[in-house]
Image (cartoon, rainbow, N blue to C red; front, side):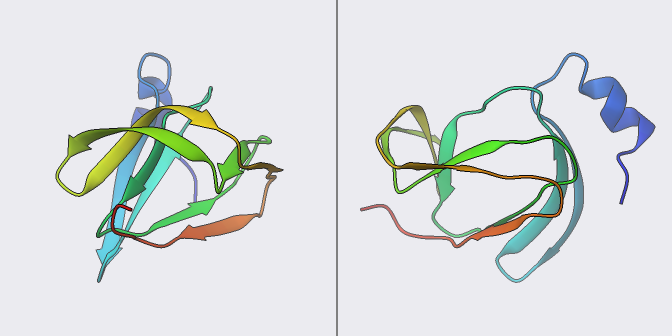
Length: 102
């Protein structure tokens, strides 16, 4: 799947630029273009699936995050401490299950 011309245009001024694709049960699918690191986040009721098409993103797992509720059932962090950093590449697929706050 390729990004739409609109998504490419948005990625020039919006980070991340996103394009909704579909949803099924507690999964939602969207295309996102990131050109820099984003915030840490997790969802209490929605699972995330990450498919890398290009680039070499780094992903931190099992890290501690400073919490800030940004929307119902969504928590984003203002920073990350510890954990393991993983380097991803084109073709990698990662699933992040939904989970309640601890």
